[in-house]
Image (cartoon, rainbow, N blue to C red):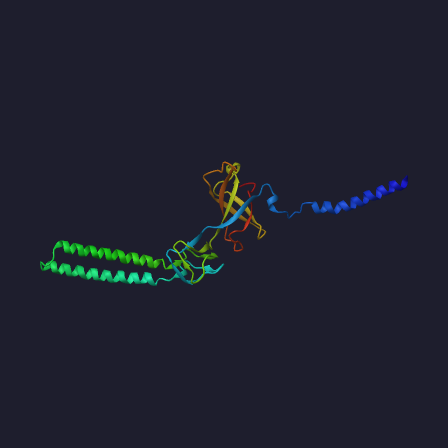
Length: 257
């Protein structure tokens, strides 16, 4: 009778030894993902300025000064369109304006000689105004020949290739501002009693593993009635150089905001 008892003891001991590593492996690590923290609020880093620049005319891209991640200065030319036709129209409009001005001078001289009436002078003056308008329109269309960066930043996406023919409204590039980043987050509406513009936040970014101080800069005027959340924006204190738009992480509200 002792042998079966001893076998049961040895079997129990073996199972216990086998279970210890499993328990240790299942034990939560101190470096667990912050998403498991019920007090952590998911955040996303977004640029304060970003836009999609599109072509304002039908034409062919003759020069493209854009590549993924390239830094672009404000007012720099990103793309150049073939504008031979537009330039020709501008030249015609300029010539017509010169001719209209000369005709007006001639009509005024004839009126002084009693060889032309006031109506003829008025019509000549109207022709001048029409020619000025046509020239202004041509100059405005010349401005469509270049895609200009409205602010400094970096290229996030390029939609076209050199020598590609595009139509008006075709996206050319996505431009992301190189200024300070903003933090976007949705918090339970119950936290509105604690959070307002200027409230402090601690933002931990997963890609860097660092925590950055921030403060609430904007609170949405409307609560999502279904999710019972409200959208907030926050600004990071300072200008961390290791952060890029699109990074994500979590935010926590300090005990004494």
